[in-house]
Image (cartoon, rainbow, N blue to C red; front, side, top):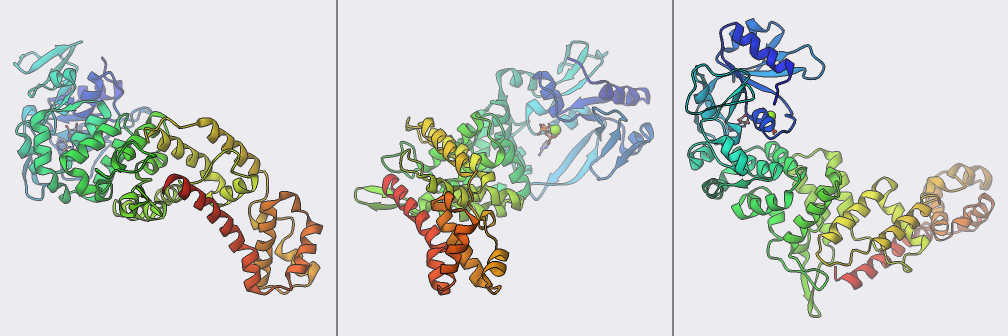
Length: 490
Ligand code: ATP
Ligand code: MG
């Protein structure tokens, strides 16, 4: 166990100026767990002005006593140095009304959220041992709340009275569950009860903060138990009521799990396969439209249109939680198209080309990943990866063939210059009618042939062109969708 030289250096300089200084919080927790801390926080008895005198190359931007020290090193560039403080009275369940500096490290530790986050560590052997200090590897750890024991037994426990701590700051509700997901720890009984009691207070927390904790949960190794905790404590109903709608919603003969169970299991598999964030989010929300579209017909439930409804619901909820627009777009696109059809022997090469056209080359692999996670998460053993590989192969072939107007062997300009057509909407109509032919048979993508066809097409009315072109492509897709609906009751 060793502190990086940059951190050591900050502590030494503060000590030399006559102040106490410790690393504190998350970095102590991670260090003791043998993990590489993300960032290093130092806490000190020096006030912000005194810190700035010790580190002239530092800046002080807020009023909470935190000074950012520039180390001049490449590896750890900045270290946050914060004056020991006490938070005084929270009235909005989120921000302390004021902070008071203190000379006591133990008072500073007492304001922290969980015991495993409320330890301080310094590279000294304490001259005046206290009953809450522990010496380890030439370091002193101050542990007034049993954080070491809780680290060892893998428990998230509030510092002090859990109800009071959640009443002060409702973000801690999410943090408790997030740490349990990241560390794989249990939440201690009274802490968990207090979370349930104070769940409605999460309303006071900004959507951005909730989103950040949510992202940490889905990027953690075990989001499934965390999502269950969010649900059981009542937090889910507050932050993601759309997902809550799926609780207890049974499905049909293709599923053994309820919509909610299936959603979080799909997410868990997306994590197990190490899929990226947007695929994880899509896995969690792909069936979010099911509760609203569930109908009973011929002895079983159907969910017609849940992909369309789900994509829209996901867009709205991601906007509400202030996700970046491009991420929302990618996720909703995957959800909109997650019902693609892929039976070996039934998907024709033309079908694969139309699928690729609809979904886009860039998204296709992610859509396959979504399908894999979703199949695994259905609990029905029939994941049949060879069928997906077959489809992937067909789509790879398809990606070599023209699937858009821009890839045709003739351009709008050719039609104007070689057939004397006038620029206008007719041109687009003709090109789409040609594309419909080429999607069916890529061999027809031949300039001479297409010009001949275009000559015939120029006699058609715009309505007729639409029927031959865009509508024809759409109809073929619809036929595929009908097939899925029949087969899977969706
Ligand atoms: P990580 O950075 O890995 O997400 P962390 O524990 O370092 O986890 P930070 O948000 O960086 O979390 O906060 C640093 C420390 O500040 C925490 O370990 C904890 O001691 C304290 N802390 C942070 N947020 C709160 C809060 N809402 N209430 C009480 N203490 C908090
Ligand atoms: Mg941190």
